[in-house]
Image (cartoon, rainbow, N blue to C red; front, side, top):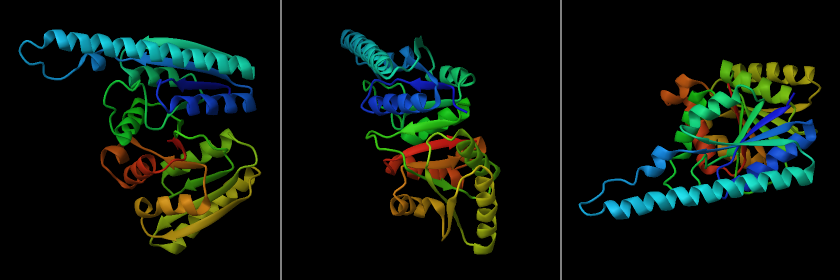
Length: 277
């Protein structure tokens, strides 16, 4: 059940899609939205090495970054409020300063779902953004789950692809996605990658029974090979609108299979990503 949605407002080209998806889900589930902006003063102030005599220029750059960020923060909040009012969705907004990942983690404890732009979290387009998998790692470690990462372009959500490897993390992600029932009447395909077909098909049968217990008719598919190399083909072949992935701290830090698969999807796919543990 989704009743409280936490929306990270980044003020970038990804923000509008994140707002629309948050309002879409809030309208469907009778949920409220908490829109949060976080200004990371330390990051904005870091303009790199300053040459002798360049302190004035560096100060001007810091001031410019801060002003642009403030402007985009206010615009993002204004857009959210206006769109929520038009849709009849309850929302509140918060303007914060500090470490964005710590703040997002803290706030996510009291929300059912966290939504953010897939390749932009609180950058406000004024600093060099870290790589998307770095953002993912920080958010996973911070504890903000489940997460829905939105791409730049919005699209209706009709099909979901669940990557299921049988690990506790992928099983938990599948369960959370099924139980949340974010979109009604989704066509769902569960895919298992690997070399042992009999083992994978046994896992898929268990996943199928679980979904059936929740009133869902799903299709299953075994794919011979490694998920990181083949996941994008499966997304395109199924024409999935949302991809469901599981996560763990250890897997991401140790660059295990999930880490590679997640990075592949986030860096190269233009679909929604549902991430849980």
